[in-house]
Length: 231
Image 1 (cartoon, rainbow, N blue to C red):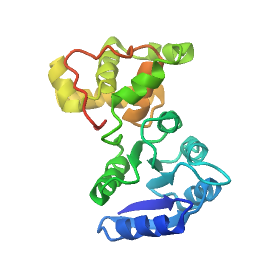
Image 2: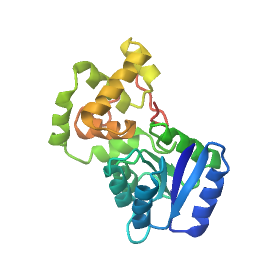
Image 3: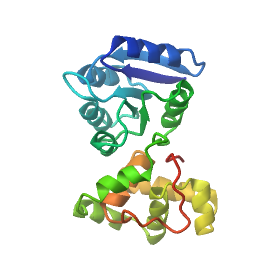
Protein backbone atom coordinates (compact mmCIF):
# COMPACT_ATOMS: atom_id res chain seq x y z
CA UNK A 1 0.00 0.00 0.00
CA UNK A 2 1.35 3.43 -1.00
CA UNK A 3 0.70 6.14 1.58
CA UNK A 4 0.19 9.72 0.38
CA UNK A 5 0.16 13.12 2.10
CA UNK A 6 -1.93 15.68 0.19
CA UNK A 7 -0.75 19.30 0.55
CA UNK A 8 -2.69 22.27 -0.86
CA UNK A 9 -3.94 25.52 0.64
CA UNK A 10 -7.39 25.07 -0.92
CA UNK A 11 -9.62 22.69 1.01
CA UNK A 12 -11.70 21.68 -2.01
CA UNK A 13 -8.62 20.74 -4.02
CA UNK A 14 -7.19 18.74 -1.11
CA UNK A 15 -10.48 16.90 -0.70
CA UNK A 16 -10.69 16.16 -4.42
CA UNK A 17 -7.19 14.74 -4.63
CA UNK A 18 -7.70 12.75 -1.43
CA UNK A 19 -10.94 11.22 -2.75
CA UNK A 20 -9.35 10.34 -6.10
CA UNK A 21 -6.29 8.71 -4.60
CA UNK A 22 -8.15 7.05 -1.74
CA UNK A 23 -10.40 5.25 -4.22
CA UNK A 24 -7.45 3.31 -5.62
CA UNK A 25 -6.87 -0.17 -4.17
CA UNK A 26 -3.12 0.36 -3.74
CA UNK A 27 -3.18 3.95 -2.46
CA UNK A 28 -4.18 5.40 0.90
CA UNK A 29 -4.22 9.03 2.03
CA UNK A 30 -2.31 9.23 5.30
CA UNK A 31 -3.17 12.88 5.91
CA UNK A 32 -3.66 16.38 4.54
CA UNK A 33 -1.90 19.72 5.08
CA UNK A 34 -2.88 23.29 4.20
CA UNK A 35 0.57 24.89 3.98
CA UNK A 36 4.25 24.11 3.88
CA UNK A 37 4.79 24.18 7.64
CA UNK A 38 1.97 21.69 8.18
CA UNK A 39 3.40 19.57 5.35
CA UNK A 40 6.86 19.35 6.93
CA UNK A 41 5.40 18.41 10.31
CA UNK A 42 2.99 15.87 8.81
CA UNK A 43 5.74 14.28 6.69
CA UNK A 44 7.85 13.91 9.82
CA UNK A 45 5.04 12.35 11.85
CA UNK A 46 3.27 10.27 9.20
CA UNK A 47 6.29 9.26 7.07
CA UNK A 48 4.26 8.91 3.86
CA UNK A 49 5.71 7.32 0.75
CA UNK A 50 4.71 10.31 -1.40
CA UNK A 51 3.86 13.93 -0.66
CA UNK A 52 1.58 15.55 -3.24
CA UNK A 53 2.85 19.13 -2.90
CA UNK A 54 1.33 22.42 -4.05
CA UNK A 55 3.82 25.20 -4.85
CA UNK A 56 2.25 28.50 -3.80
CA UNK A 57 1.00 28.34 -0.21
CA UNK A 58 1.00 30.63 2.85
CA UNK A 59 3.48 30.43 5.74
CA UNK A 60 5.92 28.23 3.84
CA UNK A 61 5.81 27.58 0.10
CA UNK A 62 6.03 24.17 -1.50
CA UNK A 63 9.61 24.62 -2.68
CA UNK A 64 11.04 25.22 0.79
CA UNK A 65 8.79 22.53 2.25
CA UNK A 66 10.13 20.10 -0.38
CA UNK A 67 13.71 20.97 0.50
CA UNK A 68 13.11 20.41 4.21
CA UNK A 69 11.31 17.12 3.68
CA UNK A 70 13.92 15.66 1.32
CA UNK A 71 16.84 16.87 3.44
CA UNK A 72 15.41 15.06 6.46
CA UNK A 73 16.90 11.87 5.03
CA UNK A 74 13.71 9.82 4.96
CA UNK A 75 12.43 7.76 2.05
CA UNK A 76 9.50 10.13 1.43
CA UNK A 77 9.29 11.33 -2.18
CA UNK A 78 7.74 14.63 -3.27
CA UNK A 79 5.54 15.06 -6.32
CA UNK A 80 5.01 18.72 -7.17
CA UNK A 81 1.60 19.88 -8.41
CA UNK A 82 1.22 23.35 -9.84
CA UNK A 83 -0.75 25.43 -12.34
CA UNK A 84 2.52 26.74 -13.77
CA UNK A 85 4.37 25.16 -16.68
CA UNK A 86 8.03 25.77 -17.52
CA UNK A 87 9.30 28.34 -15.04
CA UNK A 88 11.67 28.85 -12.15
CA UNK A 89 9.36 27.00 -9.78
CA UNK A 90 9.78 23.70 -11.58
CA UNK A 91 13.55 23.91 -11.81
CA UNK A 92 13.84 25.01 -8.19
CA UNK A 93 11.64 22.09 -7.15
CA UNK A 94 13.88 19.59 -8.97
CA UNK A 95 16.99 21.13 -7.45
CA UNK A 96 15.30 21.01 -4.05
CA UNK A 97 14.85 17.25 -4.23
CA UNK A 98 11.43 16.78 -5.83
CA UNK A 99 11.06 13.48 -7.66
CA UNK A 100 8.36 14.61 -10.02
CA UNK A 101 6.30 17.44 -11.43
CA UNK A 102 2.77 17.46 -12.75
CA UNK A 103 0.32 20.17 -13.76
CA UNK A 104 -2.89 20.40 -11.73
CA UNK A 105 -5.01 20.14 -14.87
CA UNK A 106 -3.51 16.77 -15.80
CA UNK A 107 -6.05 13.95 -16.28
CA UNK A 108 -6.85 12.01 -13.07
CA UNK A 109 -5.27 8.85 -14.45
CA UNK A 110 -2.00 10.74 -14.99
CA UNK A 111 -1.96 11.84 -11.36
CA UNK A 112 -2.59 8.32 -10.12
CA UNK A 113 0.15 6.93 -12.37
CA UNK A 114 2.55 9.67 -11.27
CA UNK A 115 2.10 8.81 -7.60
CA UNK A 116 2.83 5.15 -8.32
CA UNK A 117 5.87 5.98 -10.46
CA UNK A 118 7.39 8.29 -7.85
CA UNK A 119 6.65 5.86 -5.01
CA UNK A 120 8.51 3.16 -6.93
CA UNK A 121 11.66 5.26 -6.77
CA UNK A 122 11.53 6.49 -10.33
CA UNK A 123 11.37 10.11 -11.44
CA UNK A 124 8.69 11.76 -13.49
CA UNK A 125 8.38 15.05 -15.35
CA UNK A 126 5.07 16.28 -16.71
CA UNK A 127 4.64 15.53 -20.44
CA UNK A 128 4.90 19.27 -21.21
CA UNK A 129 8.17 19.56 -19.28
CA UNK A 130 10.96 17.74 -21.09
CA UNK A 131 14.72 18.06 -20.95
CA UNK A 132 14.41 21.54 -22.47
CA UNK A 133 13.44 22.83 -19.02
CA UNK A 134 16.70 21.72 -17.45
CA UNK A 135 18.67 22.81 -20.51
CA UNK A 136 17.10 26.25 -20.42
CA UNK A 137 17.92 26.96 -16.81
CA UNK A 138 21.27 25.17 -16.73
CA UNK A 139 22.38 27.28 -19.71
CA UNK A 140 21.89 30.43 -17.63
CA UNK A 141 24.14 29.22 -14.84
CA UNK A 142 27.92 28.84 -14.82
CA UNK A 143 29.29 25.35 -14.30
CA UNK A 144 29.20 24.53 -10.60
CA UNK A 145 32.77 23.52 -9.77
CA UNK A 146 31.70 21.74 -6.60
CA UNK A 147 29.29 19.60 -8.57
CA UNK A 148 31.97 18.95 -11.19
CA UNK A 149 34.35 17.69 -8.50
CA UNK A 150 31.71 15.21 -7.30
CA UNK A 151 31.99 13.46 -10.65
CA UNK A 152 35.56 12.42 -9.82
CA UNK A 153 34.04 9.59 -7.81
CA UNK A 154 32.66 8.01 -11.00
CA UNK A 155 34.37 5.63 -13.37
CA UNK A 156 34.46 6.41 -17.09
CA UNK A 157 31.63 3.93 -17.73
CA UNK A 158 29.52 5.45 -14.95
CA UNK A 159 29.97 8.88 -16.53
CA UNK A 160 28.74 7.45 -19.85
CA UNK A 161 25.67 6.06 -18.12
CA UNK A 162 24.98 9.36 -16.35
CA UNK A 163 25.17 11.23 -19.67
CA UNK A 164 22.56 8.91 -21.14
CA UNK A 165 20.36 9.17 -18.06
CA UNK A 166 20.53 12.94 -18.51
CA UNK A 167 19.40 12.53 -22.13
CA UNK A 168 16.17 10.94 -20.89
CA UNK A 169 16.97 7.37 -21.90
CA UNK A 170 15.53 4.44 -19.97
CA UNK A 171 17.76 1.60 -18.74
CA UNK A 172 16.84 -0.64 -21.67
CA UNK A 173 17.80 2.08 -24.16
CA UNK A 174 21.07 2.76 -22.36
CA UNK A 175 21.85 -0.96 -22.54
CA UNK A 176 21.41 -0.91 -26.31
CA UNK A 177 23.42 2.31 -26.65
CA UNK A 178 26.38 0.92 -24.67
CA UNK A 179 25.97 -2.71 -25.79
CA UNK A 180 25.71 -4.04 -22.26
CA UNK A 181 23.03 -5.94 -20.31
CA UNK A 182 20.13 -4.01 -18.80
CA UNK A 183 20.97 -5.46 -15.37
CA UNK A 184 24.46 -4.02 -15.75
CA UNK A 185 22.95 -0.60 -16.46
CA UNK A 186 20.81 -0.89 -13.33
CA UNK A 187 23.92 -1.69 -11.32
CA UNK A 188 25.75 1.32 -12.77
CA UNK A 189 22.80 3.61 -12.02
CA UNK A 190 22.62 2.32 -8.45
CA UNK A 191 26.34 2.94 -7.91
CA UNK A 192 26.06 6.43 -9.43
CA UNK A 193 23.25 7.33 -7.07
CA UNK A 194 25.14 5.92 -4.08
CA UNK A 195 28.43 7.67 -4.91
CA UNK A 196 26.79 11.05 -5.62
CA UNK A 197 24.14 10.88 -2.93
CA UNK A 198 21.27 11.15 -5.44
CA UNK A 199 17.66 10.20 -4.71
CA UNK A 200 16.51 9.54 -8.27
CA UNK A 201 16.96 10.29 -11.97
CA UNK A 202 15.58 13.82 -11.70
CA UNK A 203 18.45 14.84 -9.44
CA UNK A 204 20.88 12.97 -11.68
CA UNK A 205 19.80 15.00 -14.70
CA UNK A 206 20.17 18.31 -12.86
CA UNK A 207 23.63 17.33 -11.63
CA UNK A 208 24.74 16.22 -15.09
CA UNK A 209 23.98 19.67 -16.50
CA UNK A 210 25.14 21.79 -13.59
CA UNK A 211 28.46 19.93 -13.38
CA UNK A 212 29.14 20.46 -17.08
CA UNK A 213 29.07 16.72 -17.85
CA UNK A 214 26.29 17.47 -20.32
CA UNK A 215 26.23 20.75 -22.24
CA UNK A 216 22.80 22.26 -23.01
CA UNK A 217 21.87 21.85 -26.66
CA UNK A 218 24.19 18.92 -27.35
CA UNK A 219 22.22 15.66 -26.96
CA UNK A 220 24.06 12.41 -26.42
CA UNK A 221 24.38 10.14 -29.46
CA UNK A 222 21.30 8.02 -29.90
CA UNK A 223 19.41 9.85 -27.16
CA UNK A 224 15.74 10.51 -27.55
CA UNK A 225 13.87 13.49 -26.18
CA UNK A 226 10.99 11.76 -24.46
CA UNK A 227 8.31 13.34 -22.30
CA UNK A 228 9.31 11.59 -19.10
CA UNK A 229 12.39 10.65 -17.15
CA UNK A 230 11.72 7.09 -16.07
CA UNK A 231 13.70 4.10 -14.94
